[in-house]
Length: 313
Image (cartoon, rainbow, N blue to C red):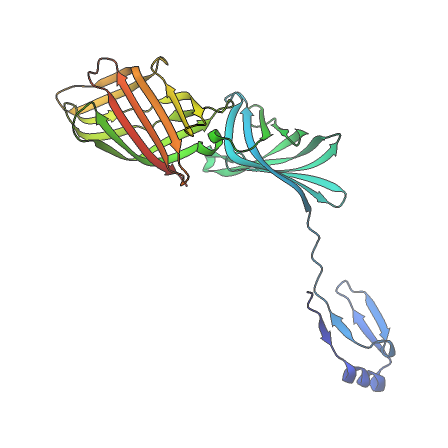
């Protein structure tokens, strides 16, 4: 409800009737407007008008695939959104993503096709996250829109895909947590705290898991143990168990191990061999559990590692 400030000027007009026959108003631009006092019954001070805001027509969420000289249609499930708005006779599209920034475009829509030009603002990791602005174009349909940025990394295409959130997109992210390590049938377990794991989603609905470097102390035979980082790719989703898994025994994957202060000296890469299997599951509370049981070439005992973490904020 508008607030209207009304000045009652009965006494003021009475004075005008005696002393003057008109009211002169000088505007800020220097122009002068004169009114007959007899024509004025009241003066109202109204609030300034608020400019009309663009009207939201549609808002959709989806995932991205990005292609340039470094990325080959890599998928990003980071909550990308497209908004379509109408501002008078003009249509606008707004893009937003937690990793690939924001964009604003003036678009045309005809025969279910979208075309437009605008600007993208993307954080530069080499400049402390400062936002760089790029000229960009937009084209496609409301289920698949390509944003082309010619001056970003020699040419970058960001394609937004409309889709329901997949199991892979829900689990994708960076996690911090703890790994508990058990060696063979030896009693006790060993802990590596503050461990970061990365889970990425693939186009086919599978995921990749990148482990962190982990350090353990007081491990029998080896003393202090460092286990290097490695990536297990293409973990397939099982709807029945709501988990991702892969037997990576034959993936020709290796991991670096280093020991200090023990009877065994370790300081090289070791190949994974059978049995080596990883299982990933995200519960309803957002806790990620990774069970990784494996055996390494020339190592007599199998290793079982359980990682528990939450998405990093």
